Image (cartoon, rainbow, N blue to C red):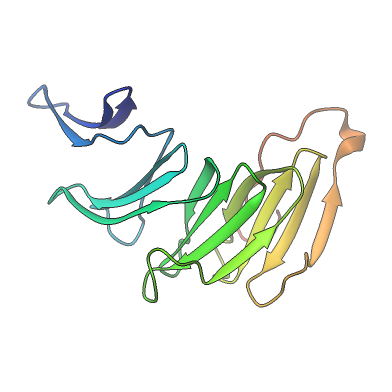
Length: 167
């Protein structure tokens, strides 16, 4: 089990009842990689750290301009994305560069980001103005935007259907 507290990222062995420190970085986000279960990302404040928790090796330790509010691994290709409090999205391809993004987007009042589980080039964003936008990596513009303000509730997240039919 992995958890974060004021002392950093910790690993707790439920069988042996022992724990150890993986990183001293304060983390508000912990994401494991679907390609390699030993690789994980931790983010907090304006820092992102990609590490191999088996060998306790830091693969990437990057500082970004604004606090990180979201992180997501692409389920189909080795991309990762960060969402920052400035409403910017940075997409990285680990085959090219761990620190420099291969693509950046800006979306007003950004809340969440999620990759498509059927097409590695598509992703969704949701915003505080109750809209969900479908994006493609080959374009700087939203392909499709739906606003849910008429439902009367607050949009808290968005994701793709596991059956790949609806959003």
